Amino acid sequence: MDAMSKIFLCWLICLAAPVAAAQEGDDLMGDTLRAVVGLRSVVPETARTAGSLGTERRGNGVVIDEDGLVLTIGYLVMEASDVEVTNGDGEYVPAETVAYDFETGFGLVRATQPLGIKALTLGDSSNIQTGDAALVVAHIGPDYLQPAQVVDVREFPGYWEYLLDAAIFTTPPFQGFGGAALIDTYGALVGIGSLILRNAREGENPAPGNMFVPVNLLKPILDSLIANGRSGRESRPWLGLYTEMDRGHLFVQRVASGGPADSAEVRPDDIILGVEDEDVNGMADFLRKVWATGPAGVPVRISILREGRVLEITVDSADRYDWLKLNPGSRYSAML
View 1 (spheres, rainbow, N blue to C red):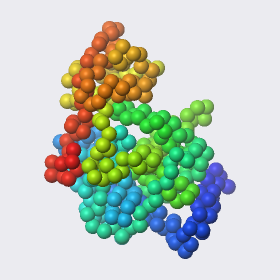
View 2: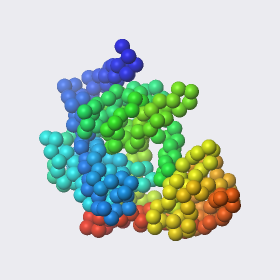
View 3: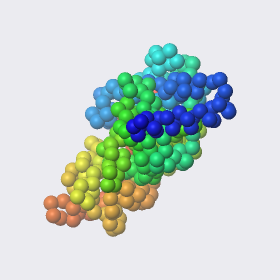
View 4: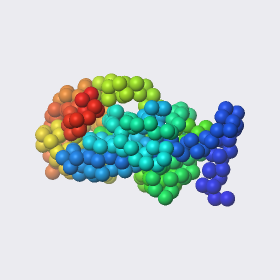
């Protein structure tokens, strides 16, 4: 028996015990698979993210309440003018965007008609540890179900000014990852698929895999997201920088067109040295130092190296939600 077969067997055995006691006779596996729905969206060509993420996006979502609320990864619905999800018969039905949270990366949509699908329970992602067996479930694609192993729980800095303190990493790689469900051995949802990457496992034996956003990040903000379309937290300063680490240096890969850094004439290939006279040590440290300067709108002074010269540039930060071009006719944009 190979390693993945052992993981899958472990998952099934662990799942069987609580199910037999608590849900005798229920088709838990069937309910789990049905709760993961297909999702597709259309984004206007004028949207800020149309060039990088496309105007037609497809992925997955997970039904998390009995009224058709679907949790997904936010980039699938960000700036979308039209959204659809699949119902219990596998047919696409209209949905509306409820919320997008840049800090966590989650998106919420709600079907405008009954789905006929039982909601999946939110698990406790803080219990997930390296070595745990899990199951990745998607609605679309030929390999919609795949056993997985958690190979790390660690910090994840994203080049788009995004940072998770404890992202979940699994192997082997799963192709239909966008909005896919990570299911623990109790049959509960513990993560939402975000990325496929080469270094899910780092160190001496690196391995490719996926990154999942832990569902515990959703719990404290869920009510506010449903009611207001936003988390209720103060927006962090956004610079509109896309960065990458190379040979120990933090480079500007590109700048968001019309964003704060673009207006301040920060350029691709600039090397970021510091924030407010403090040296930066990597992408995560850079983001934390920027966010420590105050709320969105605060001026942020960054030190950069350009063509052998050190420059001090003040970037008037912004709220990223104000930069995005949201659908003017949607309930979501009215909230924002």
